[in-house]
Length: 114
Image 1 (cartoon, rainbow, N blue to C red):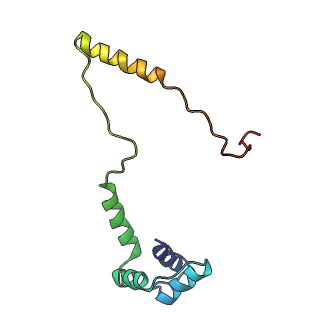
Image 2 (image 1 turned 90 degrees about the vertical axis):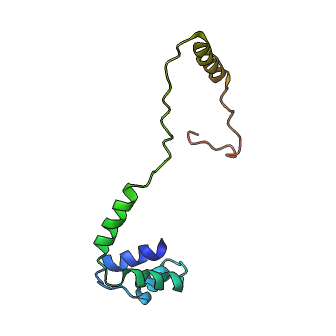
Image 3 (image 1 turned 135 degrees about the vertical axis):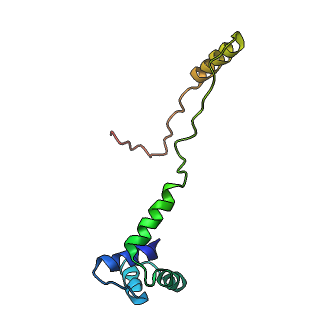
């Protein structure tokens, strides 16, 4: 990612076709190591391509990727008998029994609100 970011910074700086030296200069200015193989691979893959079109194609591909994180949607049928209702009540009782964990003293006596 840092090689791609450096490539884009060179483009934003006004140079239409960045070179390996340009990317190394950007990475060196922030103390990052420049991996020759990755720089060469990036430059060979983007040679002759418009970066705006490459980004647009990437956005289309990312739109179809499931992002996760929000969890799945759980759909359940309404309980029709006493057994289903009992299971729901039992679940509520278990949730109520859970007590919040006590805060640890790992913050060495400092708190956000002290």
